Image (tube, rainbow, N blue to C red; front, side, top):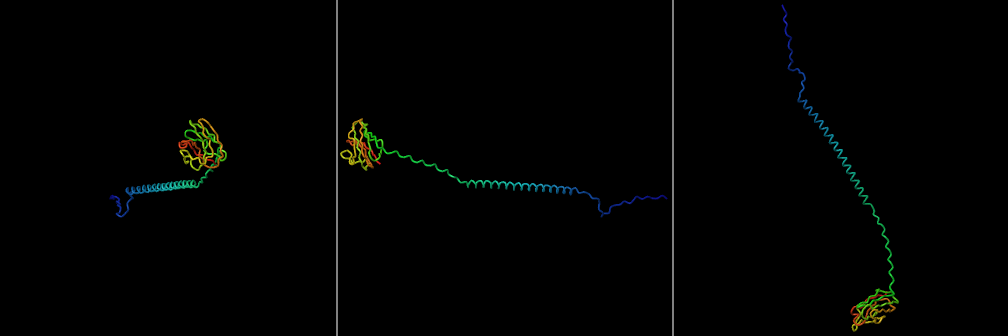
Length: 206
């Protein structure tokens, strides 16, 4: 009798036994995303740190520049301006000596001396009649202005007369030497109507 061969029994896993490990694609994707996010966060932190360092350095440089400018301004404010010594004022030129000789021109109707003052003492008047009619030259010591002498019969009062030339014809010249003291004088022509016509001037002796 031939032997009967039976197929080997089929072994089925029991319901509670663990099966072979199968990789989950969703979990792998999430892990990749987490890794990318971690790398991006690290790069962002590195960039922020670098920017912070740059900002701090820029602030320090600006502060240093501000201090330098303030220091320069402070130094400028402490500079002392030294004024140059004023140039020496030149001494006044000595006044020319007062005249001793005075030229006088008579005309219609004016008395014009070459000087308006003379030194006290001997004074010589050289009088020339440049007019076309007869004139005279009279020197009167008076405190009044030459234009304000009292009048008598249309002529000036000659109180204080210290000397005169007498009549001078046109074109003639005559000198008169007088000793004059310090004071005010009137030089006039006192022919009728000449004084009132304006033939007078003031003169000083110092």
